[in-house]
Every structure is written in structure tokens, then in C-alpha cells.
Image 1 (cartoon, rainbow, N blue to C red):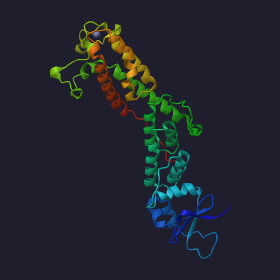
Image 2 (image 1 turned 135 degrees about the vertical axis):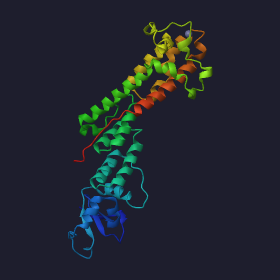
Image 3 (image 1 turned 60 degrees about the vertical axis):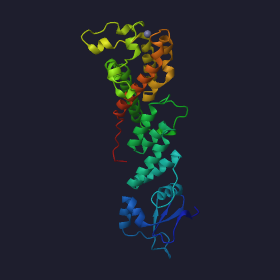
Image 4 (image 1 turned 90 degrees about the horizontal axis):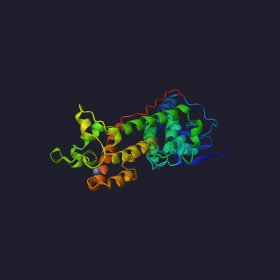
Length: 322
Ligand SMILES: [Zn+2]
């Protein structure tokens, strides 16, 4: 194999040479590597292993490593005071992450995880896989949250090749998280007591003094939804909250959408309101208010869903054993 010197790391005052798996020599400095890696710090306190080619450079320790030059160069760029670009290729990013973990570079790992997080919005399932395989629990959690808004959770157009090595448990945990978020989100739309009191909140610009309850709770002309025909006389909230049938068309459409995409913006999608608003338009009392009230309600429900989902944790744990 042809031996070459790295174009990035070729300082004459180097006191250690890393020899990559593809035969590239990276001229480095022990003092810098010792600061970023406990593994290297330990390695450099051991007596020098004689260099394989004794000569004028025998004072410089040569370390043969398993990573190729491209991975090492990107890893060491993060250790040295020099420019580095965000890594967009996930195969490459994973290799650099693996190396950083192997050499116990805690601070560098954090920066690589931030890099992985930045890629997540465009490739959430793949980032989840890479994060799981490189034991980045926080990034896996973030990707799982993004996947709540994905139309095809586990069957995207392009299956990430990392799925081939992902443990089944990693996918099971993702599905359980999805289901838990779904029932929590649906619970907001089923929470009649909350709907009855939500209007009082000043952030809608409606204060108690001039309270205007949701029109689907006050209209005298529209029919109450069948399921609310029997109010509980002992329960004040129960008397107050008897949505008219047209509102239930929105709720049912929103719950169906949440079963696929249980993230908070789902309930604000206006197409979910279309059938309900068409029916509301037939009522002279409801028609003028229906759209604005439904939009406000859906935004409020979205905020509540977001708060609930942020409390739900994927809860991945990784053992330190390799
Ligand atoms: Zn009405």
C-alpha cells in the first residue's frame, strides 16, 4: 500500500504520527490529543513502542489505527483550532461518531451529536437508526419526536440501510412511543372538561368578563351530538359541555389524523375542519363564528398536545459495554 502524508495534518513539529487503515500518515500533537481523549492520554503515558522503521524519526511515536484517513481527518479537525464543516453524509458521520466514542472523546462526541441533530429534520428515521446504533439517546429521542409528524413512520419510500442492523427492540420502542403519544394527543380532544374551561384563558384575548364560549357549545339551533344527549345533571361542566354534532365531525377527523401523525400541529390542519365547517355553515348562529372558534380551539388543543407529548420520554438506555 502506498504510504502518503495527510494534506491536512503534516506539521513538522508533530510528536506522534497516526497511520490510518489506508496508509495515510497524520502528523499530530500529543498535548492536543491528550486533552480531548482519555484513551490517547493513557496511551501517551505508556513507554514508546519502537517505530516500525527506525531512522531519523524514531523519536516520533507511530500509532496504527483502524480508521481510514477521511474519518481521522474529520475527527481531528474537531480537536484542532481549524475550520470544519458540518458532516452531511450519514455513513461518514456514523464512522466519525464511532471513532469519537471508541477514543472516549466526550466533548467531540457532543459536537458530532449536534451535527447529527441538525440532519434529523430531513431524514428522521435514518437519524433515529444512526443515533440508536451510536448510542446517542438524546438525538434518538429528538428524531422519534420528529417522526410523530411523518406520514409513513416505518415504511418510508427509502428504507434506511441501517435498519438491517438495528435491533428489533429499537423499532418496538419507537412504535410504543408513537402509540403512547397518540393516545395522549387524542385524550386532549376527548377532554370535555378542559374544552369547557379553555375559553376562559386570557391568551385567546377573551377574558372572563366578556367570555364568549365556543359557538358549538352555545348554539340553540344546532343539534347536540348524539353521544352528548344525556348530560350528567350533577356535573356543572357536563351540563355546559354538550358539543353540537358538527363539531364532532372535526374531532373525529382530527383523531383519525392523530392516529397516523400524533404531533401537535396535526390538529390545526384546516382540511380536518372542512366537513365540520360545511355543516356549521347551514346554521345562521354558528356560521359567522364557526371557523374562527374552531381555529382558536385547534391551536389551543395543539398547545396542550405539545405540552403532554413533551412529557413522554422514549427512554432509551444503553449499557457502556460494547
Ligand atoms: Zn348552530
